[in-house]
Image (cartoon, rainbow, N blue to C red; front, side):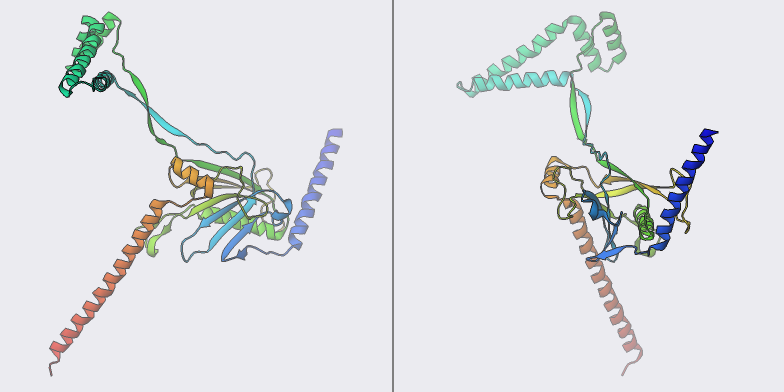
Length: 348
């Protein structure tokens, strides 16, 4: 009985709190987004500056003719950076033995440089011969037979000899660098609006992120698609004048996933049927695999521009210019031809 009384009391307090919040929301006026310097800025919470804490700025790098969007949110906890490289293995085997013999030959030639070239070359050849003969003497008859079988492609015979003699060829395995990994980042935000304007801003924010995941049709047709827009992600000081010095920087990114969850903890709606809470989970991936030079430039001066993309943009502009010039020339020639036909049909 006591447990039921306590439960009813707690439920009543929760209902009163939510009712008061709904009343504040319904009494506020919707402001929506603010436009600053030609950029639509979406900010949550609306008094973000009052917290005097670092925030994260997502800037969508829109194309000409599209409205630029900048979204400001509090820095989430647990920001993770993962830098990695890919490595594989390579078996050098006989190649490594030959390389060692070659290195010994070069060393012997250099040491005999005081002698004549012919004598030095003979000394180097002698060293190489001794090195190779020494290797084959060391493996004995069984080892030589295994190596010969491998060379002739008789792998089963070589495997049988290895099993019988309990010996194997030294693979001389080395680690080989194959490239760096592309970096990805995830950010999770829970947004609960306190006023009607904040509720509207939350809706605009989640829609802005979701929309920018998708490509657009090229020229209004369905045959080709434009890439989705790129994003800049900056961790800003409270003043908004500079990036945080002690947090790693992120290169330009694509937004590869935007997940929205409505009312994740309770199925509660306000009086205007807007959700009580909205969770947004964002996954970004950098536009390219970076080199050490690019990482250093990024950290030193925030350089997020790709030289390859800039070159591609210049080529695209040049191509568009040539295409326009060709079309104009084609129209001119068609007009001249049409006029010539008229002149032939209407002689003086």
